[in-house]
Each structure stands twice: as structure tokens, then as C-alpha cells.
Image 1 (cartoon, one colour):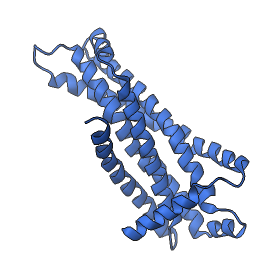
Image 2 (tube, rainbow, N blue to C red; image 1 turned 180 degrees about the vertical axis):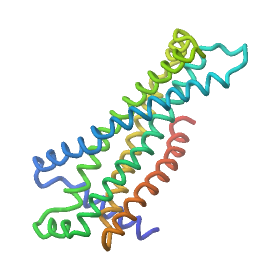
Image 3 (spheres, rainbow, N blue to C red; image 1 turned 60 degrees about the vertical axis):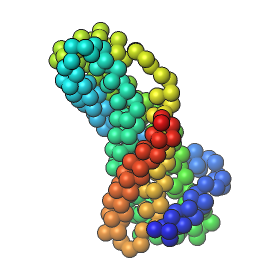
Image 4 (cartoon, one colour; image 1 turned 120 degrees about the vertical axis):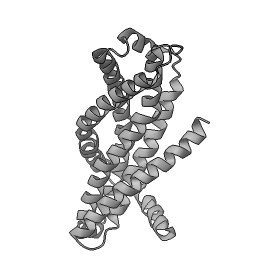
Length: 244
């Protein structure tokens, strides 16, 4: 474990150097925006709509006391979505989609000796391959999470309106009640940390592949598992630091 951690830190030191050519970095960054960000909108939209709807319905069905006003369904659903569901659940999904993609792409380049060719040409392969992916994740993942929050709340409102368990006006009143902007800041802080975990861990596992296509598949699987575990762990740490 200590050897792995040391290798990871050394790789990150090599990654976070000033790129030799900013034009090449910007070109790679734009490609990663499309691969990591734009291609994730569909799955984020689908998951967010149903997550918001399920959260609202479960909250409404479990609040059966006449002493609790119905607008609390909107308030509770909003808090669950902003504080936990959108930043954490969506990040776990992105760990599966984006993390495996990064690890497999870089791992394939490793086993086909493309990384060795970059090094032979005097290019820092860690900086060239991993830094654009980390930067794209840090920039685009917060956009995805804000989008997810909005779509989740819309899905929750639609579920309440269609099923009739809560009147739309009561649900909207709950959404607006006792809103604290720090909740959104907290979600974005978590998102940035999770984005770095996904991109850097997946990049490291792909970069350190040894062998052939089988090892690339194993590295892709490890990227999803390790990133998911670290996301849950740092979710607990950040909650303890920022909310308690």
C-alpha cells in the first residue's frame, strides 16, 4: 500500500507540471470536455430524474403524521438531493463511466508502447495524458452536479404532481423554505474532491498497467472499485469537516 501511494504521489508530481505547449494542452482539454463531460449528460439526466422522483415519493409516503405539514416533503427532498444524492450518487456513477474509460484508454496506450514512444520524443506522458483529464473533471463535474440538482428537483416536483401525494404548490413552498447557500457550496466542494479522485486514481491505474489486454481490463475494474471506495470515505471526511 505504501509503495502504491508513493508511486501515485510521484506520478502526480510529474503530472502537475506546466505543459510544454499550452496549445496542445488546450486541444487535449477540449477533447476531454467532450469525452468526460458532454457524453455524460444523458446518463446524468436519466439517473437524476428518477432519483429525485423516488426521493420525493418515499419521503411523502413515510411522512404520515398529521402534525407534519406536507411542504416538509419538498424541504426534505431538496436537502437530500443537494447534500448527498446529486454530488455522491452521480459521482459514483461517473466513477464507473469516466473512471473505467480513463483507465482503459491510458492502459491501452501503455501496453501498446505509445507511452514509451511519447517519452522517447521528449514528451512528459503523465502531463500530456493525465493532466487534461484531471482538469476536465475538475471543471466539468461541478457543472454536471448543478445540472443534476436542477433535474432531480424537477423530477421530484413532477412525481408529486403526477401522483398527487403532495400538491405542487406545497412542494414548491418546501423547496424554498430555509434555504442555505452553503448547502450548494458544500455539494460543489465534494464534487471537486470526487472529480480529482476519479480522474487521478483512474489515470494512475491505467498508467501503471503491466502486461496485455487482460491487465487493462483489470485496471479498469480496479479504477471503478478504488474510486468508489475513496469517494465514500472522503464523503464521510468532508461531512465531518464541513457540516458537523
